[in-house]
Image (cartoon, rainbow, N blue to C red):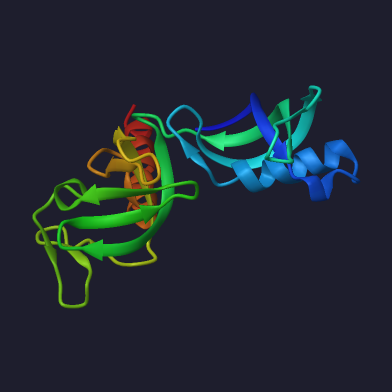
Length: 191
């Protein structure tokens, strides 16, 4: 889920930026240091919006830079269990598919792609034996996050499922919605 939060941290201003406006220098350094960074607590930091507070700086002998405690506002994404995501299939592997959903990439295991026996074809697509449904690279899908591991903070693992109603390839979901509306209309007529 995306969040807008006020974060407190320390930023180092190198000596070459001492002649510039402090707030601009702090914002530049915060963007360089934090944007794109992944932490277990904040997830991926998407953007630093503004600097809210800058405390007096400290210069450490032998370093030359000034260290300022700051408060700043950032947009960040924290993946959460049971959260619905929409993304694009970026890769198909022997064991499933990798889905890019913006801030992160998740993996949906072969067994979690659809309610069917799934095979990988020679064309590198996932194909349902009975349903004849298929998934290929660049398909747009909706999935649910079912597992999150920050064991390697730089490369978190996110497990996904598409084996629930209204999940899967977006075209499948549209068909499911149309069938549901038809059934509702038919039920309403019979009353």
